Image (cartoon, rainbow, N blue to C red; front, side, top):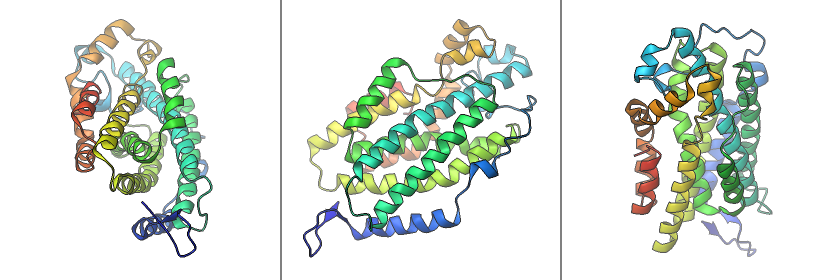
Length: 305
């Protein structure tokens, strides 16, 4: 929501948005990390550890999981962690472009403008951190399906306002809950726990800004606009979440890929984990008027409701 200052400028941010931005800038000055220094990149990978909490594995709770050896289970979670990280990189690149486009040619003296650049700097560091982490886990480059990549290309070019910021929030909220579990789990390899801790701390600021922006942009929005953008955000959420666990992880972990994909698709435990991770997010989207009937269809298909 913009306001007009005495000189007639219309890119001046509302006072509450400025206050949030100042708070986030202060937090960034005192609680930010340099992954190059903080993460142990030198110690060789210890394969006695998981790459992620086993309970978050797409096969945990299935008959196939019970048949796997502990070594196979750990190998799978390492590939799954790398796949999630790779998806995170893909979406963080979309996020950076949307934020840059949103703040293009706006008032650089405004705290919100400065926070936007701070967030982009964070995301650049995070993407490099995820890339190095995936490589250290011994995984190949996992990318979304071609159709999703092309949809993302269109989304980053066309999405604006609440559609952009609510989609950012969806991606970060799902990652946040997973990574809070992983960073506390002593079964997870230490360098991945450090990566997750850094991301959780710094992304908490990004999520606060995304919530604020979403609410600001929706102020006074028409019913039709809310209906349209609710659907856009839900489709984006479906594309993001269904891309997190690349189907190639099973073959690369030495498993029967066809059976693994079949059991993962029917895994009620994993679906329940996703739904529980999104409870707060869905409450926010509902309060913002973005949890419409049409949007709910896509959230259910992605197992977020």
